[in-house]
Amino acid sequence: MKLLQIDASARCQASDRSPRGSHTRRLTARFTRRWLQHRPSDFLVRRDVGRSPPPPVTEKWINAAFTKPDQREPWMNGTLAESDALIDELIAADLVVAGVPMYNFGMPAQFKAYIDNVVRVGRTFGFDRSRPDDPYTPLLAGMDKRLILVGSRGDYGYDPGGRIAHINHVEGAIRDVFAFLGVTAFHSVAIEYDEFGGDRLQASIAAAERAVDDLVDRLVQEAEPRRAA
Image 1 (tube, rainbow, N blue to C red):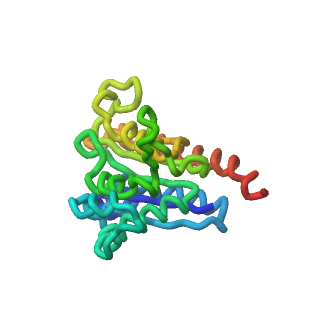
Image 2: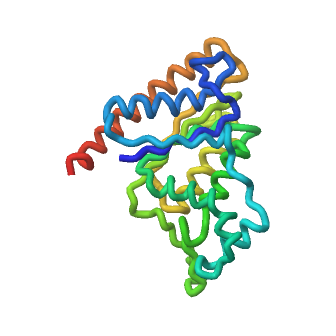
């Protein structure tokens, strides 16, 4: 299997290595490390959009993306080159492990730029005007992909049913975008209380790490028949 680890935090180090480090980098590394301990022959690709964000969508990008490939001018292919590379990575991956912290109730701009580069007509979704009531086709459907989203939040109570779940615009937005492309198997784990620190933060970190470990173990068991096949 192929794993794609995407880190979107602006913090360069993980919080288990630096007191001001990233909790999401801590969890993505933990997930992939434990996965490869179980399945050392699997292949891991790392994409760090926190340190090297994709370029935002521009007018030139839009013109290129919405021009049919056989009609593109040479500059259009250059404009879409990084988008193509990101999409190729996503298509090749069986398991996507994305570390996305909450910034001001939403995803970081770096990860939004990633999404804007991989959601592309003709590559990850189709559009058919002859079906006016349902013109969209998820081109990644049927590939048996999974999305694992690990997050971190300064406050607490953002999970469904929580005290401020209504202003959490991270998990739902990312889940919906990937589902639009055809990736509907979705799991999420998050650390809370980062702004509070102290025992509550440490308890949340410990709970998230246990949840990551349990999720890895369960998904590895589900993957075994695939490897045997």
